[in-house]
Amino acid sequence: MIKINLLPTKSSKKRETAIQQLAIAGVILVLTAVVVVSLYVVKRIQVATAKADITAANNKISELKTKIGKLDEIKKMKEQVKKKLNVLSQLRKNKTGPALRLASLSDVTPEQLWLTNYSESGQDVRLSGIAYTEELIARFMKSLETSNNFMTVELLVSEQTEVAGTKLKKFDLTMKLKSDIAPPPDAPAVKK
Image 1: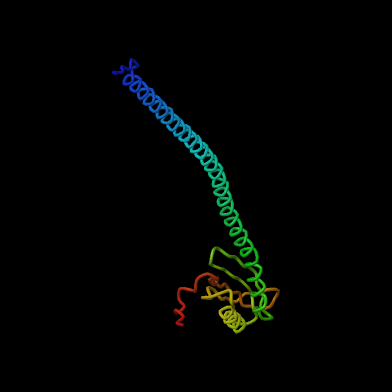
Image 2: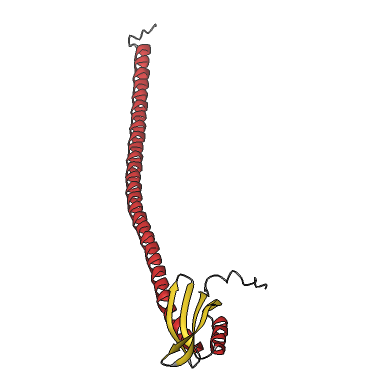
């Protein structure tokens, strides 16, 4: 007996394999779509994070620029204060300088010698006075030379004058002030 199978076996197998292949292709397609979408979302999150980091960094930079600007202002103010302090110290030095010189001048002035005029012009000093003898004038000049305030003392005029019936010697001197900053130009260099 011959049996004939009227059921379509090959076509049903083909259909089943086609359905399986389509299901597998659909699953692969869905998985690929999920991977692509997840990668896209991850990249979008990374981009958003990078933008937030850039914004934060720019804000930090602007804060630092304002702090640097304030620091520069403080440095300028510090320099101005230093200049003002230097001016004040120079003024104090100049204020005490003449007083100290006059005190020194008073200390080296011998008895029977009187000063009638004292004037300063920069480093130049002019001094006038009256003394009993020329020896007093000479001793006074030596004392001025050895003082810490004066140098190059020169006698301009020494003449006899009469004051209240007494014969006295009138004199005029010129000298230079010793500088605290630089040694006198005539002084030899000090070797160490």
